[in-house]
Amino acid sequence: MTNSLDELIAEYESLQERWADPSLQEDVAAAKKVGKRVAELAPIYEAHAQREAAQADLAAAHELAELDPEFAKEEVERLTGRISELDEELDELLAPRDPHDGEDVVLEVKAGAGGEESALFAGDLIRMYTKFAERRRWRVEVLSIAESDLGGVKDATISIKRTGGDQSPAQGVWAWLKHEGGVHRVQRVPATESQGRIHTSAAGVLAYPEPEDAPEVVIDESELRIDVYRSSGKGGQGVNTTDSAVRITHLPTGLVVTCQNERSQLQNKARAMVVLAARLEQLREEKAAADAASGRKEQIRTVDRSERIRTYNFPENRIADHRIGYKASNLDMVLEGDLEPMLSELRLKLKASE
Image 1 (cartoon, rainbow, N blue to C red):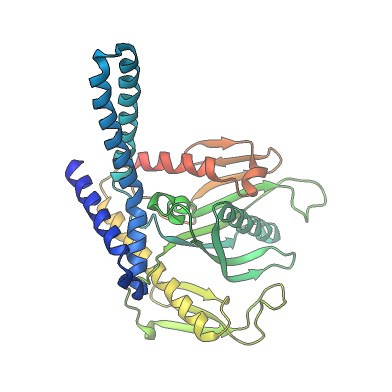
Image 2: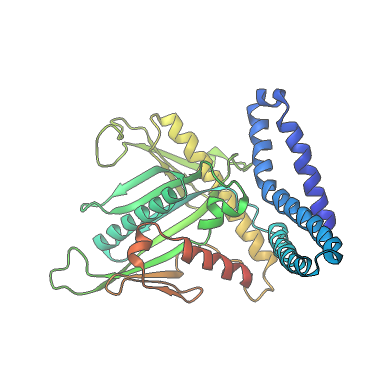
């Protein structure tokens, strides 16, 4: 741990000196890159500084043993425990982690089996993720949305971006939402059900990282089909009245990306190309990970839509994540964005199983 830690501390101090150089601010891209790396290293530097201070205090406590044995004993015990805690914290901070953890996320939510009820549930999921993002002070941007007749969501793509606060990779959007891909099942009495019977329907979620810088993926435009159409929505100023929405189909893979949020066709195409590049990069990484893990008992999880990952039971107010055996009777709170307890346990257990 020491060599790696020493190198990171030296890098942080060097970047801090560079950050203080006024000339750096003239290069916006470079300043942004340095600032991001400083934020990533800051928790390590802080934990290291606290450990160094605790060790100094421990040495002083040992020196006081002859003058005040009882006080020194208590201080030695307290500081020894604190140093042990900081060692664990540093081990966690230095442990290998997903390189995308600090990145933003694109979520695609699609209605599945269940007709109109599935579309209503897909809308509930979009609202749930939006509420969670608001609690963490992230920004949500709707890239495209197709609504159902009753106000549900047939298909939507949203971008969730971190805007401030703790900039460590462990608190990144991808670190929190990377495991949301899969089939989400709902059990409840639909609004369209006149007999009061409980129905089961589902919606699919696809999650993938959206790097700050577009992935360096070579895309042959001859392999793309680009369609333009009029943006859809609830009306008002936010909906374009021209054919500015863009749908891009990558013919070799069948991937489809749409964007209707921007004001012009060129802007929507540019954003859609960035999202497509992120999707293609994710596919490449998943294939490489699967190939590398072919001999492991538990392969790295992918966003397979056929996998039922979670059930939302409205009559019992119960949420269940089937991958880790998680159950809680607070579905109403989860739908209001209180996802931290479930996602924290999910992150911990799935990381331990890798």
